[in-house]
Length: 457
Image (cartoon, rainbow, N blue to C red):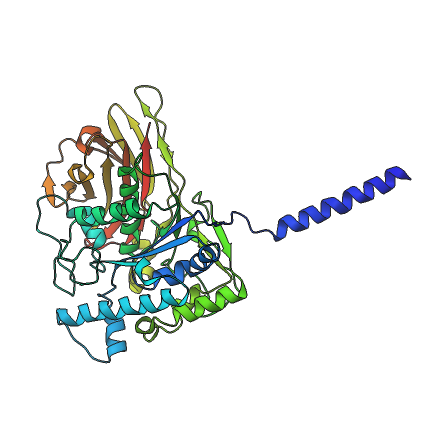
């Protein structure tokens, strides 16, 4: 009889434990009064749709919160036309739109408790920051804004007015923010996001954190995803639904963190999003699509590539998800895609890149890869930033904006497989490498993989 009673109690306790465990969200994020929470937003409104719940929870625990907007979002011409109800190409009008969006962010963030002095705007060029990251370093003419036609930060309220549109300027500002605020947790846009400014903000942050290793305590970094094709579905305000990882990222090895929001926090986030009228008017449903019962964060795992001198080549296959950042006509014609399955290895003082293609390279259809080395011994601005393109005309290598002779880069081609061999000295003998691959018909991007970091061992 005692054995039966004991067994019954054991079963009841086990069921209760399982039930309690099932109700507890996995990989949640906690905050305390010692936290210093930094929100990095590529454009005004990303801070609200990506992390308004984070801000509320952090402030409730008396944590310090700082919000930084990377650009003023001044090149969204469609929203300008709808909001202002007029068409213009004057640069002053686009800067005016950037000021409108700055004011919207100020009102939205203050409404959820962020102090005005803790909201910072950098004012770098909307839709131009990835171009800066890949090309504009050193002694070059600064980048010129697509619509604003300016080459320096042109907002009086910006952190560094008149800073040139160059990689050194952005990196300096990001490092200053990190040194001044010394965050314990950083929420930033995702390297798999198809928006270029979202990707580049992550990349500049990564380099800044590397530069400051040993100078500040390590921070936890939580990337949030916004722009993914056909995600999330359905569009519109659905507070009863949960944000789940996009299908294209479910097999990428990302450890996702889901932050559950209360009904009050969902409503407060909705009210904050409502301040972004310039963006809501031309697409009323979109921003509210991210106002759901949770917020989602997760980063790619570290990729460690072991250098070899002998033996069979050890490939690190990234299983990189593809982002179809293309126009609707191209989306329908998937047969044109040769999105590569990319793997990396290191041997004989060379980086090896293996790209297995969906089809052979043909006329007007090529593949390319970015390789940006990082070394603890050199300034990142001085490191090579290679763009290697392969098409029917052969191999083309560029360092930032300068075309190089491709004689040091080896290419092996067999059927649908390409193998590149790039000497480490051509990459600046790096400790780490930032990399991304893409395909392109007629020199226009078709498919682009996520940016990843290779740690060389």
